[in-house]
Amino acid sequence: MSPKTIITGIGHFLPPKVVTNFDLEKKMNTSDEWIRQRSGIKERHYVEPGVGSSDLGYEAALRAIEDAKIDKSEIDFIIAATLSPDHYFPGIGVLVQAKLGLSGIGALDVRNQCTGFIYALSAADQYIRNQTYKKILLVAAEVQTSNLDYSDEGRDMAVLFGDGAAAVILEPNEKNDNRGILSTHLFSDGNYASDLWMEKPSPKDNPTFSKELLDTGRFFPKMDGRNVFKNASIKMPEVVQIALKHNNITIEDVDHLIPHQANDRISLMVAKILRIPVEKVIRNIDRIGNTTAASIPIALDESLKKGRIKEGDIVVLTAFGSGYTWGSAVIRF
Ligand code: UT7
Image (cartoon, rainbow, N blue to C red; front, side, top):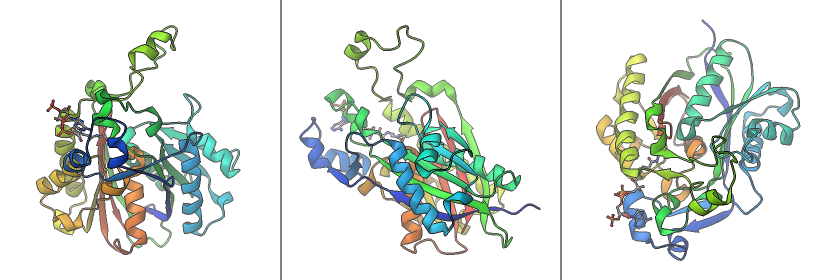
């Protein structure tokens, strides 16, 4: 049997600027009380103008490489997950690659929004187990705060999101000691694409960019919050159950659950449905907000560095988001 894929290094990077709910109160008709009660968020990080997701991803990559104790030249493939690339094209995989000075190796971009890290992890896992690559750098990075609608119309979304990045190094477990990625399960349903999307600019419009587009404000992300909330609360427990069954384990065997940090109420609902004690659920949304693809690996890195996740622990990751896409991963650390 081919060796399992293990995470040998992890790091994250948050831009230094912290924006509190009180700061947002000054920009739009909202309140600290509403944001905390409805989402659990107190503050989030914002980039300064001129900083893109490839910059945050690069910083996170440096930390993951250092943590893995490898030379960056050993990396033989890059996977980058983001919904907020620096440019319409190319994706940020090649930009992170160029910043690292790793010209020539392949760089794959994954566009699966909040589930981006789990989709990218699944792809990396296949490459490692097939022995196609030996050291994959997976970067998940988002700069979302520069294109949110800070008017009252967009306040439902504007208060939720933050910027940030995390990266992992993935390698085959040569010790073959049963540690590593045990499973990944991926799902989607494009019938609900418009429940959470950034509809425009779209090449379907000719010209794509017009004064009319600017006047309509349809270039801001839009969400049917209640529908997304409802489906997230159903689909994440469902895909965790599928993973538990696949691995022939029960929820009691799980040491930590890391749900995508979209809304603390969703995380608590997922925990309740799964009947997992809340102490086993990793939650950092109060300080970081929703960083889409980066949210799970940021929470994972914090928990590993704090010693909350220990060797041998079984960690279950789950996410739900735009697409709809959803998925889970089970990892023994
Ligand atoms: O990461 C991708 C996945 N994303 C998610 O999973 C997010 C899922 N959805 C949610 O987290 C929640 O639906 C929200 C946090 C976005 C909204 O919470 P809610 O409890 O579903 O509120 P609501 O949309 O039902 O709105 C309740 C009220 C409305 O006012 P009326 O119509 O009752 O007068 C909104 O206009 O709250 C109002 N509202 C706000 N008030 C103050 C919406 N946003 C705000 C705001 N501040 N920022």
